[in-house]
Each structure stands twice: as C-alpha cells, then as structure tokens.
Image (cartoon, rainbow, N blue to C red):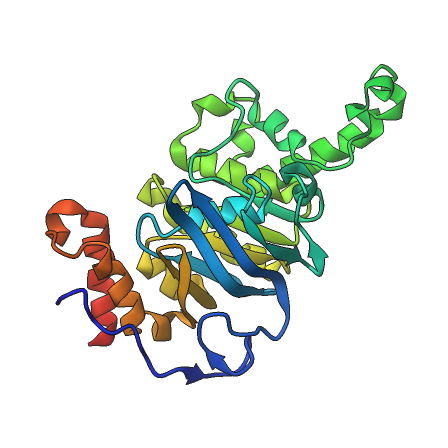
Length: 304
C-alpha cells in the first residue's frame, strides 16, 4: 500500500460525547479542555498546529499518531511545561495561558510523563506525600511550628497509604523509589497524581516500558479513574489498548489533528492509515520501525 491514499472519509454522525459529525475539531457535548489555534515551532519546524480540539468530560480519550506527530509537545503546551507561539486553551472554562505548570496542577489538571519523574532517593511514601495540595508545612514560618501541620500530615499520610494499597504498592512504601521496577514507577506516578484529587489526568504513554505482567493492572487503574469521575487523556501506541478502554480517539499527524471519533471508526479511517504510512513512505516499514509495523497491521486488520 502506498502513502498517497487520499485522506478523506465519510464523517460518521453518532450521539453521546459530541455534537454533529465525528470529524477533526468537532464540538463536544461537555468539553473539559478546549484548545484554539495552538501553534509551536522550533526553528523552521512546526511541531504543533492544532486549529481546534475539545476533550470530552468524564470520558477516556486517546491521543494517537506516528512518532514525531507532536503528541507530547501538545501535552507540554496544555500543561504549562512549554509555551506556544500562539493560540488559546482553557481547562474547565478557565484560560491556561501564561499559567505555570505547578498552578495548572493545583487547578486540577495533572499529568504523568513517558519517562517517570519519581524522586529516587525519597521513599515511595514520601513521593506520595509530595503530591498532596495545600500542605501547611510547606510554609517556611509554619514549618518550624509542628503543632500547625502535624495533624494534616497524618491525614495526608493516611490518604497516601490508602492509595498505595489500591495500587498494590503498600508493601513498598518504605523503599526508595529508585528501587522500583519500571512498571512500578508508572504505578507510583499515577498513584501520586491522585493525591491532588485531580479533575483531568493526562498520561503520556502509560504503557511504555511496562512489564506485561503489570499492563492489566495499569489498564484497570485507568478505567478506575473514569469510574471515580475523572477525565482521562492519554498518549498511546498500543492499538489493542486504545480499542478496549478509550471512549474517544484524537489522531495527530505532522502537528495537526487529522481525525477524531470512536476507536473502531477512527481505525478504519483512510486518513489515519495514511498518517502512519506517510511517515514511512519510500522505506521498509518492518526494518525501519517494528512498532509502527505492528500499529499498521492492527489498523489494517480493522478494515477487513
């Protein structure tokens, strides 16, 4: 199959999360995150050029696309870890322009990273306690007066231990975070995110580098976030995972949103297949990138 497939498909009109046809930039019934005209360039390279996108509240949305599509850069822009050249974006009706990452997190938008950011020389429990908001003891003056913060600290520790038990990390609470496996660090990062009682959780490739034995556990915890009333937006390459847990899929290619819709409809969209093939035209897919060969096989299998 060549990469010059015309990126067109008949829009599908469904009900539930969006209004009208499922197409790039379509309106959502109840969006929690909205981005307009967000653009980021690095020299002569345009990494992100998103005209309009809305993330539905209370759903699990997958952000997919080939390597270099701009997914992580877009995450960084939305969460305050990078600044766009232009554009506006808002979370829960509040503009996030010029708001630093730590304040975005306090507003209820929490993210994790593809490469975990746990503090290796702190214990697992101390990593968890760092995620709690509004700690009285963080004030320099109050810190020297234990009676002002000791009660709150006990409550935070109890909450941390409860969440660690849910993630089956309670037996590791006194261990250094550096001693955890890659999958356990992913679990710790997700667990720590819950310490701040977020409204929207953004996960950057939560399955990357995870032992298959922990994959199902991570999947269950992502589904549980939705059960608890949170909204989830995640970057992922595993199409099997996307099909089974995502309510909505947004596809990026070359910095733009090229398709949106429910998982099964999106994966049969010629524009999506073209986006993956287009990143490998004139090359041997199997030799150059086994990961994308696997992704393409799943996309093409969905068409049959």
